[in-house]
Amino acid sequence: MRLAQIEDGIVVNVIEADPAAVPDWAADWPEAAEAGPGWLWDGEAFTPPPEIETDPAEALAAERAAMQCSRFQAKAALLSAGLLPQVEVEIAAADPMTQLAWFEAVEYRRTSPTILALAGALDLSDEQVDDLFRTAMLIEA
Image 1 (tube, rainbow, N blue to C red):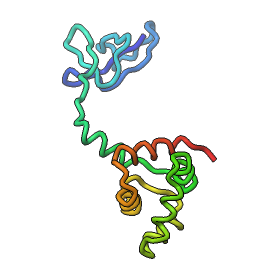
Image 2: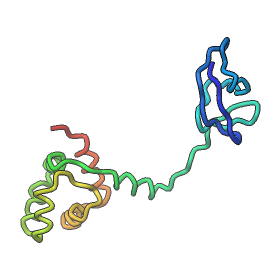
Image 3: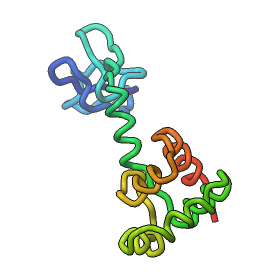
Image 4: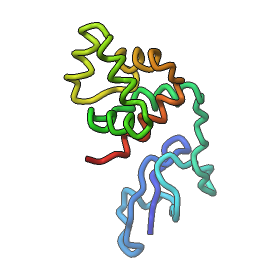
């Protein structure tokens, strides 16, 4: 049987216990067939925790901040999209620091200045860059 520890109407812990040997310290815990931490307890029944609404803009910003891929993955995605030759032209014309970043980076991050500059030079929308990163992150060498 599953027993739930409740604090202030919220499940904070669930244990599995033999019905014939429930520990004394859990004797007054309610039986919780499906409930888990975060579920609500009103004294009679459990309900799932409320869904937390996230701001779509914040969620997208967090997703972009987490996007990264290897140099190989980035170049493979650009090649597949037909953009690698254009990127190479832009890099050849870029300032030395951008060239160094492009050629020496082990990984590229979606929000890095180099990626943002390249996206602007290629006239790529934020959504196109997102799609390139999503594609790149799926590529295996």
